[in-house]
Image (cartoon, rainbow, N blue to C red; front, side, top):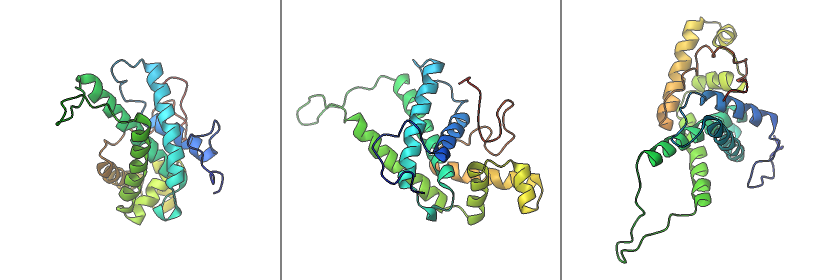
Length: 210
């Protein structure tokens, strides 16, 4: 795909369709996260969406076909990881007062590093982390993730495609998701690999509630 051949630093207003879908699914997967302290539910949803947009854009830059899954699936996983990581950071930050670091020699307070620079470093490491995690999975596990994330297939549809029971697909998909999330240091989202929540359409679309 060459729709993102020349990448600006910030994502465009209209992302390519596959990246838009990745954002929608990442938002659906993180909908259950309780807003961090001092964050109203509406603002937290806007924050998640902004994080997801930036993450999928950076993921598209880091993507190559040798990863073994589609760009959409890779971008979705990166976006979920970015949202989850920021959620953890905000909860840690707001649950305790962190003192400014002090220079050991001068005793003076040291200013925090530039946030944008840190964010760029984090996103670069994040995409690499997801790539490495995927490389550690088997080809069969990557294919299951591609069907589930990339094509949005249900367990029943995957079972028909591979010619086995839905129960078998469920176990294999859960195993692949668990192994992936363990390597990413996150919990498996409540309905990844399970029946989608009532009201959510196939493909990860949700209503306005966020």
